[in-house]
Length: 513
Image: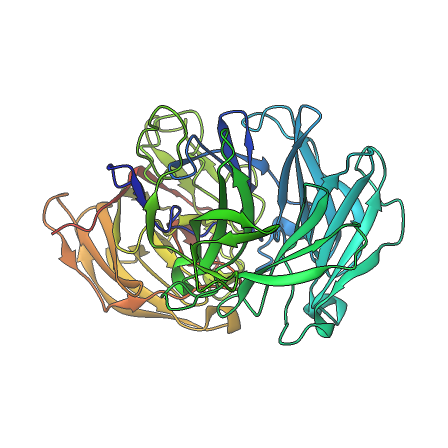
């Protein structure tokens, strides 16, 4: 909970993997979107009344496109850094797929239906788009380049769009070349604004973990642009403070949202005070007069009228509604028959899916959510109803390595196990670390995550007394994404028919004493 209840907040305001955030204010409400890579649904949409207390209200991309490509996990691909804007009564999200181009989806209500995505620019390596509707009605889009696809990066390109913003109207031109700026590398993530006759590009450089936030300005949108570093780590412990959004309050006070890479916890979101000096933004706590701010850990909350309830994005799910909670995602487009909330009312039924590979890295039918705090416990009650030996189901912590606790169906009965797979992304093999027989297919499973993303698994047969199982497991991120916690039900071997696993609830809480 970032809101400290005394008129101040503590960073990060989103201690979860909301990478590459962009945000706007519409009326009295603030909205935020972020990267979601290969996870579906994609493009999470969050809302806040004060920039501190956030809730998930929707996903702008129910399914990833092209549909067939994302039937299986495409780790590190999919939706990269998006831009969110409000124009002509609609919400607009431009997002890049680094392998296919830049896409657009819009909505009149961000909590409602979003339009099917249309491809605005085709190409490989185009990333981090941001539009600007200029005063003369012209529409522009700035974007960066991914070296892994295009063969180069560290430059920002400006493209003129059609008047309806749906397609390119020219071939584009480089307006800022980081290769010509001393010390610049990996210039990316641009956000395009206009203020007092100046065009501003806010863009990070220097790398995700070690970089900084720069601002560029010009009188003409095509440049030439002056540059200034406006936010850097300085003497703080907040590394790589960059890539985000300038937002103002209804009474004209400026703020800046950015991310910080915390490894297994993902890219968490910070809120910084911001002010203008001599036509340049100064973000965070002002330094020694050089225009470079440092990120703050605590600060006064934005003045946004009546106090908003203290809140954080959703985590727990009782599975008693008509749909899964908005916190849940799959590593690929979900398919019919994976789950049901009606076959056993009040519970989530995961139908056991036949394994597609040697470990879970290639499996699409994993129901997951982000790590939600530096320390937390995730607990679920499961009844396992397999039909054949070799089926397994349980509670999973996943990344480049993964570990799970759950039940396996054996020839002699039920077995509760802890399984670890190291190097899953490189075809690593699962190893059963610990296991023993239990008497019932109904069991309560728990993972406790403590500082450093250290995970300890336990189980209970009566829901009261928990028994530790296996070794501590240190979670790792996967490509561009923090670790996740979630549920699964799979079958290995030559199963001809499979059963199911019923989860009565999933609860995320403070670490128990």
